[in-house]
Image 1 (tube, one colour):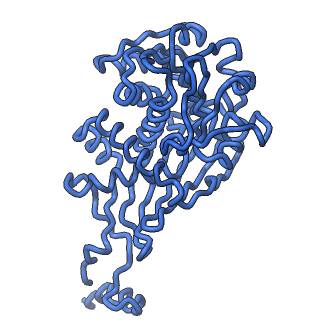
Image 2 (cartoon, rainbow, N blue to C red):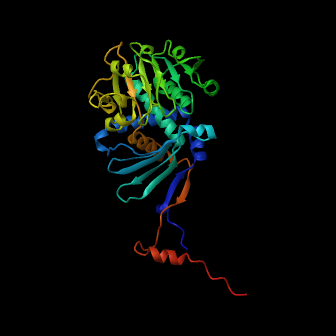
Length: 354
C-alpha cells in the first residue's frame, strides 16, 4: 500500500505535546500571544460567521460545538461542562478543536483544547480588563479557585500588570492549591476566608465558579463604584453568579449577545436590556470605561471566534517546534475517483497454505 502523502497528514497536538509547547514558549508569552490574536480577530469581527454554540444539555452537564469561519479558514471546538465530574476525579471541562482550509475542506490542525481553552479564556478575560478596568488597577480578587484560577491570575499579571491576587473558594483546599501553584510567579497571593474579605481593596473581581445553578456569589452590596467585574462562571442557561442588582448598576460588555442572553449573567435581565459588544470597544467604535466611578462588567461565556484565534496562534507556531503527530486522518487515493480501489489495494495478502 502507498504511504499517505504529506497533504493527507494532519498535524495533531496531544496533551503531552501541548504541555511541552507551553513550557517551550513560556506561559506568559503564550497568554499574551493568544490575547493579541483575539484582539486582531475582534478588529475584523464582521468577517466571521457567527452563531450561538450548538448545545446538548443534560441533567449532568452540557456538550457543545462552537463553529466559525472567516471565509478562508474554518474552525470548531468540541467542549463539555460537567460540574459533577470533579467528584469522580474527572475534569469539569474537556475540549478538542480543529482548523480546516475553506478552499479544499481539508483539516489542517487537530488539537487538544482543554489546556488551550484554559489559556484562551484567561487571555480573553485579561484583554477585556485591559480595555475596561480602572486605570492603575493592580489588585484582583479571584473568586473560585478551581482549574481556571491560576491561568486567570497569570494572564492578568502578564497582560494587565496586576501584582496582587486575593483568593477565595467555598472549598478551602482549592485555595491552598491555587496559592501553592502561584508561588514564585511574582504575584503577592493572599488567601481569604470569605468572598467579602477577598474583594477588599480589589479593583478587579473575577468570578469563576463551577456549580450548575443560579447562585449569588456576589450580592449587590458587595460591589462598589469603580470596580471591573469579570464574570466567567455563568456560562449556560440556569447558571449565574451575580445578584441582578449588580447588573442594573453596571455597564455590561459581552461577546455575542444572542449567545450571552441565553447563557450569561444577562439571562437574568429583560431581553432588551442594553449591552455593548466588546469588539466595538476593540475597534474604537464605542468607548469602554467612561468614568473612574463606573462599574464595568465583562459577561463572558466564551465565543467561537476566541477559539479560532487560539487555534490560529497554535497553527502559526507549530511547524518549527515538531511538537505534533502527523495523523493519517484523510483518505488519499492515487485517483480521487477511485476510493474503492485504494481499499482493495490494502487487502492483506493471502496466507500460503502449509
